[in-house]
Image 1 (cartoon, helix red, strand yellow):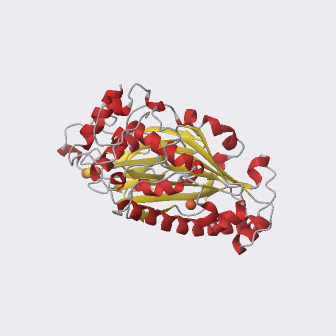
Image 2 (image 1 turned 45 degrees about the vertical axis):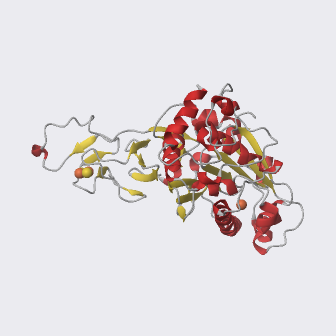
Image 3 (image 1 turned 135 degrees about the vertical axis):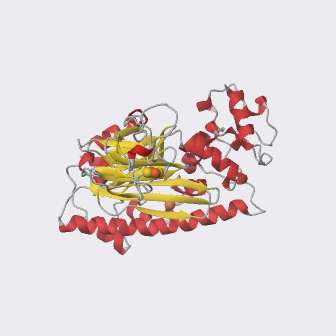
Length: 414
Ligand code: FES
Ligand SMILES: [Fe+2]
């Protein structure tokens, strides 16, 4: 039994810690999932925030959402706050959204334009767009403040094809390295020219974030649960694991005429898109990036969405649409219909996510049974088990001991 322990007893042997972290995988014949307690446990959520969300690259948005000097966007996640702003020199920079005076947010809104100065809404400390402290009200009431030392704290930031990623802690491969296997797909499009197509959206679930990821991570449910996607793809939809942190799901358009109104008219309205590589012209391609992000390349636009925990019973799904400026009537129609199809699919997924989460709480629930077509769910669970070996325990450790148990299991692996 490689990498699996079936009871709450924590031993070196049970975890098979001789294996390197990345190889602690469940054998394929084991088709179970994470233990049900993992979907409703505040201590575990705190660990996930620390070990999964603070220590991996997280998307804030795309540079096309902040085209002008002073434009900014923010991300609140894992009790951290990120601010991304375009400077006077045109550069995009990331900071903690954290005033150096008393810790307030320095911008109050999720997005907007702050002009040439970021002014904290609490007492009015001002920062340049480069992050440097510009001035404070009643400066004589303070000792002399070094403007660089008391500037906004910069965040680890990487921009990949216009997508702005931040990392709150830790180190590891760059996004360019993680996304190298799909670099060519994105390089085939003028990604830096994308602009906001629609307002960014968010949806709050009253359930653990992993329940949402579990549904999103497989396409086995598409033929039954998503009539529009099935109509669009036929049987072409497939999930591919490209690496530990990267999956690619592809739905090529079917040959048969679609029967649903939105899908039929979408396929008809969509222009030839001959500027794209052949395999992107009649295809929806979903790039799943650990720990919580999907970027979709549609022929006529791009979208992204992410899942975050708020606490063990609340999570957020957040996303946005991006597109190249194009006023052709047929492309406006195809984009409208694409969003309509996605809205229907999203509503269907929300229901599935709720039902699955309810199931984990049922007294009759034992475990899930994954098919070969749900391999991404297992791979994602494996990745979580790498950093949270406590997830191998079928029974929850005693209250107050989860972090310590996880540390012990992780430590034993080194
Ligand atoms: S907390 Fe920002 S000015 Fe006081
Ligand atoms: Fe779905």
